[in-house]
Length: 82
Image (cartoon, rainbow, N blue to C red; front, side, top):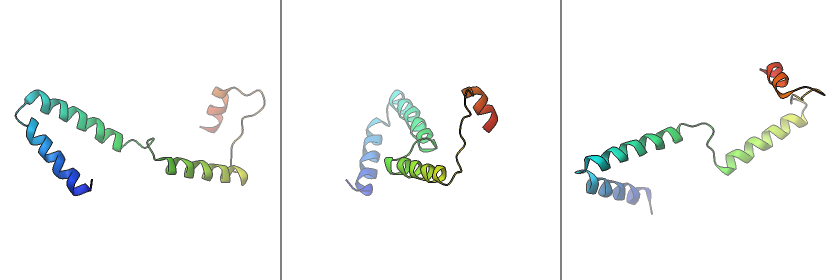
């Protein structure tokens, strides 16, 4: 389905529920959730994720990584790097 066809289908479906206030409220709530997901920087495609992993590996290879010290707790490590 093309973007134009999908857009037309969405508008047809919205017209079907437009006369129902409860359904329109549900749609509005769902749309808010979708917008929040779109703006969530932690959501990414597999390609984006693996690209970031590869970049991190390269930084570590170049010595740019930060290592935990022996016997250092996670809390101590986070305080040190933060």
